[in-house]
Image (cartoon, rainbow, N blue to C red; front, side, top):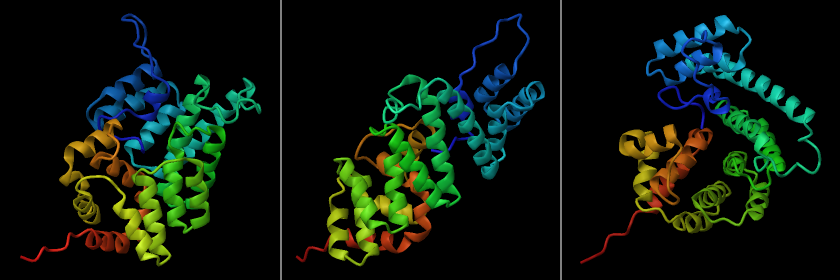
Length: 281
């Protein structure tokens, strides 16, 4: 997910949690960022971020928090790239980019902040429809962490659907033995795009989530938050959902938002295809 502006934690808070200052210690930029992270109003958050930047104008975390509050996505991407470059340089100096470490990122504790930055950057790229760049980013994340602890493969599935890369999609799915709703949606949508309606329906019907048709109806009308307020808040602000539930589907389509503009025909078809036939009396 992209960082949320409401009560959810910002990337700065998640990646570098500041320590509480001593009562008699002067306030630092980190202290102000901690206050900004806990503030419940945009006005207060911006006030604290401004104070942090007054103390440390080059603080990338503070700049990123400011960009988030101002909905400046291109600025966020630029700052994200700078933060990733800095973190990567540090990890290289420590020897973590040696051959024996590649593939085990995230399992190596010191690489986790870097992986968090990269997966958020991947999300940002999809938001501005830099899909080819996003594919490269996702593939590199899988190279660094073959077990994919950050879930890059799920975003990559959606990217291959969007780009109609059927062979690449099947190659990816072959690497991970899964049959969850991400896999089934990806296969169903790809079959639909290639005109194989029988396969599209077969894969769609394998999705074992109750009220799937109602979910698709809400998705089509951009009414997920209104229809499923508790599940939506749990997913988008806390990142919490259970497997094969409505919350899981919300998570998928939040990550695949870049697919929605070109998916209305598929979703309309899926909604009708899942309609139960009337039973004649």
